[in-house]
Length: 637
Image (cartoon, rainbow, N blue to C red; front, side, top):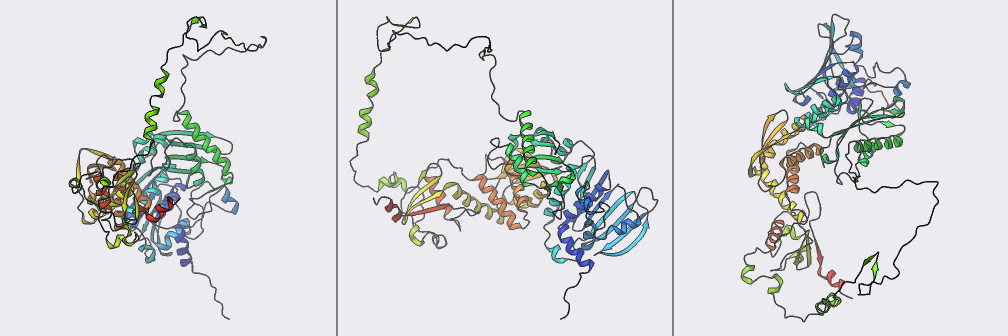
């Protein structure tokens, strides 16, 4: 039998490794910027073209590399950070495995110019697909200059699965923000297609947060600072009143490294229990410093998941630190006592003998005596005259109301409560559903009784009579279904009606969110939004879709941007679905809103004009039919 197992070529092995480390252009930016920080750079420039698909350039003024180091750095597992396995548990650098440059060189065309501080000439190295094409001496500034072109040029399948430029740029900005937030003593600059997006000089941490997310963050942040023998916690948490359903900025950093940690996230949210509405999130920027021997950062290819040795103890310390910060800055409601009117509490004297309390009462007091001769507490007392008969005056009337009423002859007009000539003015529920809708309602059993009036139950459900029994419709979900189909039609046909606002609203977005807004601006315009850029991530909202007056346009636009970011969709139809769904939920009638019979009739008519009236766009039930035989069973006994 011939041998069938063989070793993979280095180029193929590097491409496989690159699939774990380099997933998209944002991964290249992350790895190169972290290497620049490890090289003790004080200033880092990042330039991307076409969201990194065409070119990514990272320039730093760090240590630089010699000719030998420059060549060796692209070999797999070549690193200057660790010498033996024990070094893995004493890491204080961003990179250490030596896989980043090898993985990048395996899937892109790389040009490196680097020079250490003590040398007159630097090194220029060209690599494509893990193959060194040239190496020569050049004159270049101190530090390193990486230029990554045509990412995934030799793996067409991987390049095909890259998202739209706006989505990839948003991912680059997110990675850039995470690194900039943890290194305020390093200056960062980011350019996209020759347009400056970030200019972050050296500044304190609080100012760095404001420079990235806007000056409003300064009024929202409360500082956290706790130092124990196990862990040091610092950073900022937001005030409870700034909570939001989407778009909260939540960052954990440990020893200068960004991480995701759902367990510690619960510790922070536990401190806000009963301070923010259910389902809402709070922003926080929390920096943890622990002994590197007590954590393991080598459990994930991108090093975003970290394992702690004492997670439960750190959970308690973190939750207590956040609660202390909220209490210190009076973010938690407290009970205020009026100290001026507080009674004096006498001090206990140990030398004074203890005596049982004595009860003083008037033995002659009788509340049923009408004479003024009796006294209580030294003052005259007389029982007031009370007309006891008046208290029972309503009982006879109430007993008559509980008596059974005589049955009145049946009249069809009593069903609707309106005269026949008035009934013609109100549009009735369609007598027979369309074939597509009726198939899901037990066929023809869902035919509505002609002339049936709609009733509203507890401001939430609409009740109407159908041939098969009783139909209950959730008014909010029904309106969401109707509005969703309407907005989708407007977006596709670009016939959205815009309602101009008297005073334009100004919305300010971070660079990562502004990039997403640019990608969906065409669909926003199609549905009726009129936005004009003001520069610096600011936009003026000059018009909103007709029919959503009274809603906050700033929060509405921000929610649509955050939803698009969370979904990660760049397909036009999916983005349109997100916009239409967000608008429909925001503009739909709320629970508790009282509707007239005409409004209920119009809503029901519009609902069954929809192709899928049974469910909302996200699959929730809109209506339920209770069959007549099920109702009869309730009265069978």
